Length: 490
Image (tube, rainbow, N blue to C red):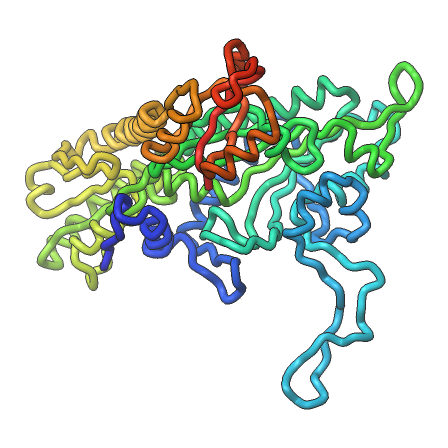
């Protein structure tokens, strides 16, 4: 196969786009800004979904489904919410087409205009809280812990496969609680669930923190975030969890009878991750030869290539591979045996490499004779000859080693590209020449935050959870109230 990719150092954006296409993850569709997720890419997303869904259910959440369409009047009930999403909304105005009188095709039937226009959901807070009003009367009805897997539409002008598309897949949790403390604890619980998944399964180290007022989710009292660093020194927001206070309950008049009497508005959270995680997985680990996937999320964990010249050799190899694949499957390890004799072994090696298959096994007649098999690991490209007798245990341990190594490399990269500065001149120099995260003391000014963004294109990724507020602001020289991370970001 033709696997040559543009070098990451030469053009990181071009490398990323080429890799998504050549690894068979996704492609652009006929609809501007939308993508087709191909089977191999969707298989990775399905593994992510399966792990996350199990974790959500283990913490007491259940799945439901809510409408794709939202009455326009719902969106306007929460002022900050409508302001935050108005520019990205796709609006349905008519419900019927008809043939043009001049025979030029179909046109919108002007007599089929909707009485109330509908928004194609950019997020579901409004339609869900209108529903919750019918479900909640008493403290006995709380908490409500619901998640939905869905597609949403945000009419982005500049798109990039997985990272930013007009339509994308995600999950969105929406919970309702009797107290502020319970709701905030829920938001933090889900933030930690996300962080654990990202580190334990995606092998991507993340920093947890709070968003500034300027960067909060529209309608949230507090937005908690997980931030990661890609190989090009840019940050990526991986997932967010929002404490919504009583904003949506007040907007939709959702009150409940308290245990000690009286009425109160319900407290809320929402939280979500999307197919953007696919972009993070690609950019955090991969190299100029293709994907590098953590074994826990790789659709194919072991690729096997036979090397033979005669039908007799092929039959002997097939018999041994069948034995190996069954033993690996018994350990929960997924394999692909590429015995397509129309492709040369070198082509198959390159294809497994491009797809990021963590371990590749090569087996030929000489290996059978010697009782050995060639093992190649994708993360380091090291090859070794191993005994066939112990190959299952060896592969099982090797997959764990690769998972850990991929995480450690990403962690070391982040550490090497995290700088601490105490003045603006050094800050600008680091942002321009080195990139990565820049840790600073901060006075909390919204106006100065906007000014720095305009001057450097760097944004505050998060306010650190362990907020070290002593000292002076690196920009204003005033007393610092926060410690924050700046970075240029996707």
